[in-house]
Length: 226
Image (cartoon, rainbow, N blue to C red):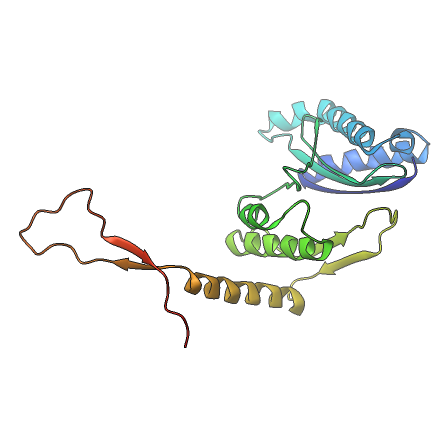
């Protein structure tokens, strides 16, 4: 295989290390990923290794009430075909990102997903914009879940480069990462202020019956700034 692959993982670190170690061993011997003719086949090879490690370790883990939990993201490009992005589940089966679902997530996803759902557009979002959305998604996750935190490794790949030229690590206290979070909060508050205003209309005079269907909350456009 001629191309470039990058992966991310969540779940059991020890199981993930076992999977990566065996994939590297096979690659160095000219097997496994070294022979994958496509990114899909590479995802299948990784999935097979996930199942092998599951067969080795799952029983021992479950005896001590630990769940075999390994999720992997594989992204990259094999020369001669377009780039791709896959999520590989603990059962070893891969799922590819598509035009309708142009991104994949692993780990703590619920806090950062709404930003990606509203912002990412398959045919319009640039690589630079996608990088900002990724940082905002992680910033929101870190704000809502204290178990998630720096360092953050950001890697961006452009079609047909076949090498990594854009990468950066954001450690704890990174001023640029802090700037992203502060400006996002400021922009969010400004956007809320520009939304239609909510007004609570006074109810009927005391003693007069009110219909259950009567609406006492109104949305009105904010006044134009002078």
